Image 1 (cartoon, one colour):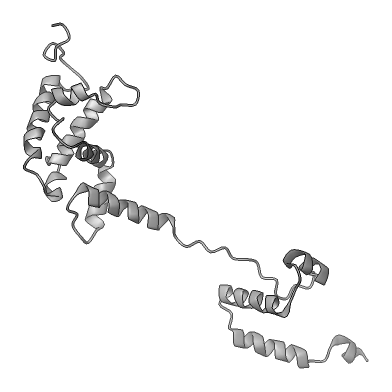
Image 2 (cartoon, helix red, strand yellow):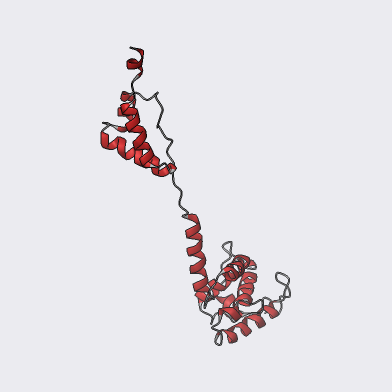
Length: 197
């Protein structure tokens, strides 16, 4: 049998016999493990399983890195649920981020599924940070003509002017009462033509 498992000596720096032995040991441990705290340690189940799967994936003849069913059976990890294998591989591939997240988290995680969900939720919250678009203020600018304003906003009404004023004040933290006083002062102040006359 020229292509037997025993005849091959080295793959990715370790012997196939050692990988088979590791896989069978993991198959036995799989039936006994339920604690993420223990399984995420350097010698824990998920870490060991993920590293073995990483080696098998690297030695896979397929471009996608998919591990064949025969290889899984040969290494004794076919009895481990495929979702658990995928989680263990994900954990090892993202080990630094996972350990940092677990350390920073105030609660302990009971499974890799819960850890993945929490990390996904945290990443989503970080990506959806509120980004408010601030519109430039047109207050005090005199180069806007009524025709230009009508072209930009449509028919300009008192309500539209008020809504824009409120939005600008809220955006820039301007007190509306001060604006109201300024408007009243402006309406009672003499105009340039009245002063010249």
